Length: 52
Image 1 (cartoon, rainbow, N blue to C red):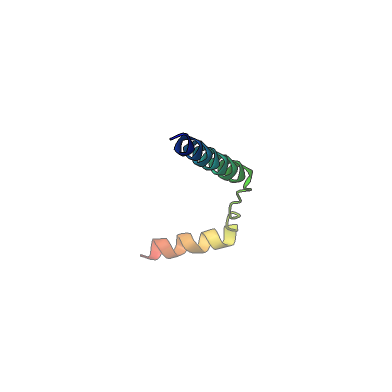
Image 2: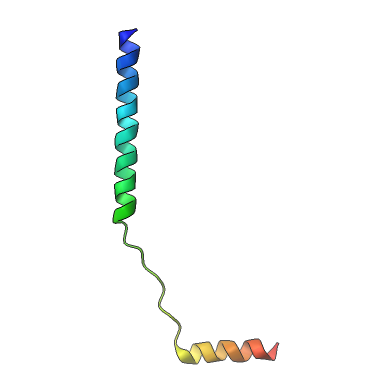
């Protein structure tokens, strides 16, 4: 019986450690965004939209 309790505690600690590592890596990830389109490209898109 004691063996199963120790085994369960080891499994719980392993899952806790892995979840903390995953969360830490997720917060450390550097998110980037695409740059805004240039004005000339934006005007072309507006002209195409107005033709429809």
